[in-house]
Amino acid sequence: QQTLYFSRHGESEFNVIGRIGGNAELSPRGRAYSQALARHVHALNLPGLQVWTSTLKRTGATSALIQAPQQHLHELDEIWSGECECLSYEELQDRFPKELALRDREKLKYRYPQGESYLDVMNRLVPVLTQLECETNVLTISHQAVLRCVLGYFLDTPHEEIPYVHVPLHTIIKLTLQGYNYNMETVKMPV
Ligand code: F6P
Image (cartoon, rainbow, N blue to C red; front, side, top):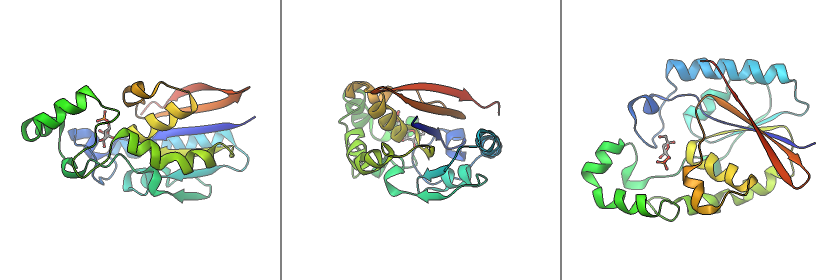
């Protein structure tokens, strides 16, 4: 039976202060999650476990303690917000009010200036998604927007809803193939 595991990185210093994008380190709580995650995953004893992460520091630090082969893939990097990288949502509202209004209206198609849209992310994920479909016991550690697209793909979420899928921090998501559909279970780590 095919099982795939997913998690966002542990809380980053940017999550704490509400800034988007960037390449921040984990916060102390995020580091606690990386320990809890490794302990949880080791206890599962998954045959042939592999870990796939993005190339950003926060996912690499989240997976660092897991004993398994690791791949760091650019396709799993967070949505690139171009000129809006590293801003808080308040700064976005001040500096790019029109952009934010456009994004609110059509979040799926909205492309940040010099950056990406959710549709762009979905397109760049295709090779990884096709590969993942042929694997079992892969733990993918990535980011909020990317995991919305990944889960939306496996769970057949209507595209317009994908940018709003709830993917909380510090939660391990398990997908199990049952017939033609994936069943989802989540485990929240107490950190
Ligand atoms: O805030 C964390 C984060 O991963 C940002 O880096 C990213 O831009 C954002 O979430 C994506 O969520 P939304 O599309 O809802 O802004």
